[in-house]
Image (tube, rainbow, N blue to C red; front, top):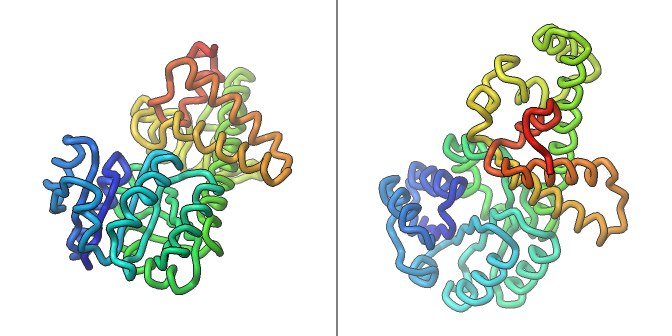
Length: 296
């Protein structure tokens, strides 16, 4: 297929490269010259603008920073340039309201569109092992699934347009709260004189077991390899976790839902980011809870 890919950052660059590996013809665009050069090296064709990328595309994939960017790119450029049979796939993580509004606008203009945010981080984007949570009509999902499968290990239909974003922010609120709880527990165990590896061996086979502990342990040298073993570099940045927790809090207010643990996790990640640690992996919150990072 001819696929336009808009947004070639840490996630989008790896995703576009995997589409090339799957024998798709990818015409890519980003405002960053460096990102465009990396995409060219991975086999993508450089486009000079969104319009040029989209003009002859069978499908458009976007991976953008926020809802304002998604609304602007689709509303001001994609809708006016793409052919009506072009499939639209937004993989950005944005607020549910914007995802629904852009999706409804697309439908009113005759386009099939899905929102398909991802889980897995930079390593999974490069390896093609992302999980996609997809919102949209079944026909649009069926068209999108083969494209998404080239970039991921799991493609799950969540429901109507916007439910992909709902699933993503709920999942990441759970992850953020679990990582905060895991980190404070490991810090407490350490202060109580428990050997970290010994406590890990106990908790990993007990009722306190979680993905944050056994697959992504925030302590270096404990459990499988994780960003903690690389000074919390790579993985999923704390600033991005804070973004998702804020999206979850906004959605909760709209839905009149109580999310006290999500709110507390958001406050902790705000402290971590305010301390200048937003670029490190979100598991670096253990450093703050151990008193190794100044919170402010």
